[in-house]
Amino acid sequence: MTVDKLAVLERLNNDQELFVEICTIFKQDGPQLVRKLRDAVDAGQIIVAIRHAHSLKSSSATIGAYELSELARQAELAGNQGDVSIISALLPVIDAKLHEVIAELS
Image 1: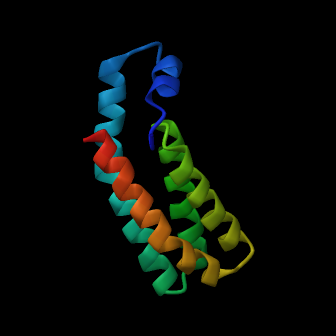
Image 2: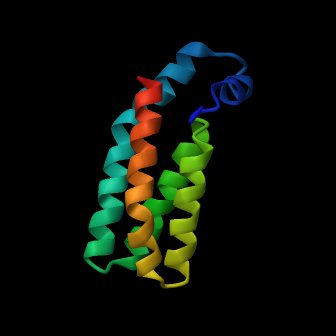
């Protein structure tokens, strides 16, 4: 299971409508965040990359996609250490995990 739906629903007091709304937003925003992260890395904009990794980390955790959130956390940490090569290496893994999450939410 890529998304811990039960944990999220518990935090949301079992509000299914809110969960669906949050997931719908994530399905739209998640791919954009990964694309922006990749673009920032390609452009050498480390501060921008850190910001997008942080946003992906937070939004992934919000929907219960904890593995994706952890990958984004690693990218954010690498950015904070100035190591773009680690972010570049993580991007294909992040992208694959994002697709798994979106498939599970669909």
